[in-house]
Image (cartoon, rainbow, N blue to C red; front, side, top):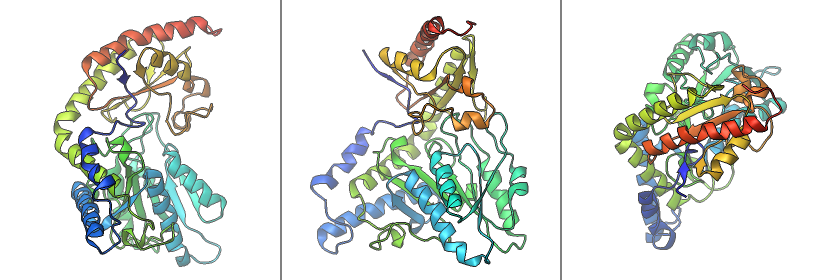
Length: 398
């Protein structure tokens, strides 16, 4: 049975050319890039070449790129590191304020919750509409005199909604020019956007951008944090002076090389891959929305090209995922980072979906290898799965 893999928002296969690029740095050019001998210099050159590729892709300077282990680490570094760096600027009795959306990835929400519980910050949650969209005008209302950071993800990983990050960045720039005591810095989690949307940092108007390799056909265990020059930041792991002193620890040379190669491929193939995936995602949405009781989550138009997410009445999400898996179709129910918990999705709850309905969530996320015949197979087989589960349910049938 040929596997139909439609969980690319959770992780992607490592591209074969990425593996080829990585291989020499495991058993041939395996030197430590912090050493001055020839093996170390070869490894250092490879790291800096990848840094240059990623900087060019983002329209940044190479020394604004920090390699980390994943987007979660990048977010912890940006949020905790900024708060630590600016806290001394606040008078006794006051503390920094951070503005976030309630549908951010858990890496943002839990990092902010942790700092708030420790009494280091206050957190303000932006309102969102039923599609998960932020209104940039609400940024103006949410910002306080003590606000130092706004964090809005570019593409929501569960429902695929694309946020107006560039407009928010422009709004923050204007606010910063109004003579505030505390400058506002802007972070976006671009993990689900990096392959498909414009992620050039000046276009977005951001100070921090995070993403991870395993969503773009690089390995798990490598990520990036873009940090705009002159942004105050205290490192969160102490040790050596790697990564401009912002992230101690020997660089993972093979994985950094692999990430550089993956970004290079994404840049080269975007114009051909994007329309294909968009077309297939629309075909999937049209086919599944014809099934009674299936509803789209996220914005119908302002959404990432690769994510199609739904709620299904009368069928439980995990059960659908398991039955589809038995048929050779790989999908997910909610975020891969939270789906092990039998609780309602915080994203669906925030956009007004009831707990009962959210347990019927189902997400398909396409990749560059997805074919039309695979989409048609899903459209053909999912109704059988839904019917089977509804027949087993003690709830009222549709």
